[in-house]
Length: 603
Image (cartoon, rainbow, N blue to C red; front, side):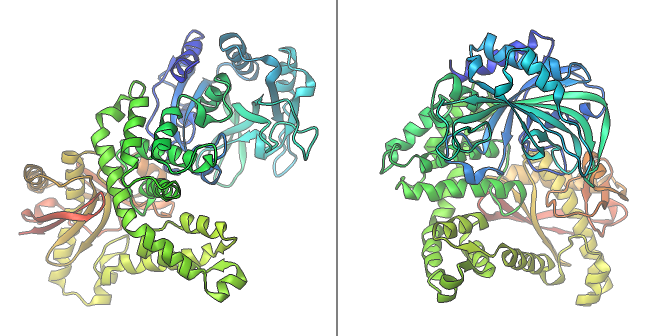
C-alpha cells in the first residue's frame, strides 16, 4: 500500500467518525516558545485549554513536522528530521476508551495490521514531585479489546508522559502502540520488550491523554476538559505496511535514494548511513526553504543551514558531484507536489536557495576540514581529548562550521568539544557585533549610547529618526516582497541606515520604488508612534515582530506605528512619522547568501 493511500485512508477513517479534516499548519510554529511545528497538536493547543474549536470537538490532520532532537540518530532505520504526523484529536469529547478503540480499529480493520504484532506501553504513575496515578484504565481497555496482558508494559514519565510543547501547555499520560518487526529477542536481553533499542520493535502510534496543564514552573493542574491528542508517523506506518526494513526503503524515500546511488561512489548496502542522512536532510531543506526560510546563523535559518551543510558534508563522503542538492530537491518536490502543491509552485526559489548555500559552503568546507585536522594535532588536545571552544568558534566564524558539525567531526576522532567555552566565545562575538562601535540599537536606550560615544544632540535626533525608519522599511519590505522577509541585522549612524534582510534575489528597481513610496506614504500620514510594555507571549500573539528571539525578558517593550508596523524593540523613536522627512533608498546589494542589504537616508 503506497503512502498516498495510507495518508488518505487515515483521514477518511476519522472523517467517517465525525472528525473534521484540518490542513497541515506551517512548519513555522505559532507558539512563541518554540521555533518549529514538532507535533500535530500544536495548531490545536488552545482548544485543549478551553477555547472553542472552529472544527467542533473532533479533528484529524496530516501535519508537517520538523525536529532536530533526534538529528544524531538520523541514519538508522527510522529516525528523521522531517516527518508527516497523522493524528486525531478530541477536545472534551471521547477519551481513553474511545481513542484506543479507534486506533485498534484503524490498524486492524482498515489496514489489515496483524493484531499479534502489536505490543503496548502504558504509564506506570509517579509519586513525586506530584503524584499521578497509574493508568489502569488504558490497560483494562487494551485487554478488553484482545491484547493479552503479556504484551502490555508499564513505563515512567520519560517514555509514557507527553508534553507540553514549548515551556507550558497541556500534557498527560500516554499509551503507545509498538509494532514487532521481528520475533527474535535481542542477544543482550532474551525478554526484550518495547523501548528496547535493539530494533525488534518500532514505536508506531502515541495516544496522549491531555489531563493536565504544566506551567513554566513545571507544576501540574487539572484541565477543565480532558482531551485526546494522537500522533503516528506516516513514514514508520508506511515501513510496516510496505514490509520494509527501514523508512528509507519506502516509496517516500525510494526514488531519492536511487538518485543518490546514481551519483555516489559506493553502494547503498555497503554503508547506508550517508545515503539516509542526505535524503532526510535535503528533504527537510526543501520543506524549510519552501516556507520562506533562508540559511543564516540564527533561529530557523540556522536549523536550515545546519541540516543542509550536514547533508553536503556527507555528500563528500560519497563523492557526490557539486550542486547535488538541486536535482535531489527537484525529485522531492515531485514526490510531494500533489499533497503539498506549494512546493511545486516555489520550486525555483527552493532550488536557488539550496544551490546558493551549497556553493557557499563548498568553497570553505575543504579548507575547514584541513584546519580541523591541524587543530586536533595539538598535543594538548590529543592528551585531554577535548577541542577547546574557541577553536570550535574559529571554525564557525571562519569556515561556517556549525558547532554540531565540529562536534560530529570530533566524535569521529574520539574527541569532545568544550561547548561551554564555545558559547562564551559566541556570546562575546555577538556582543561586539551588536554594539557596532556604539551605533546599533538593540534594546539599549539611546541615552546610554550618547554617553559612551558623546554624540551631539543633533546627531542623536537624526539617528532616532533613522531608527524609526528601519521599522517602516521592515514592514514595507514585507508588504512588497513577501512575509518571508526578516530582519537579519541593522546599523545606523547620524547620516544613513543600513538594513539587512532575508530575500533570495536582487530587489528590482520597480520594487525599490514601491518600497520607497510606501515608506514615504506612511511618513506623510503622520502616524503616531506608540510605546507599550507587555508580556512577551502577549506581544507575539498581538502580531509584534521579534525575529531575533533571543532570551527576551518576560516583559518587553513594543513600538507600534499606527496600524502599519509593530515590533519588539528597545527604542528610541520619534513621536510621529511626520517628523522624519523624506526617505530615499541609496543602494541595494547582496550581504551574503540569501541576504540583501539596503542603505537609505532621510532628507
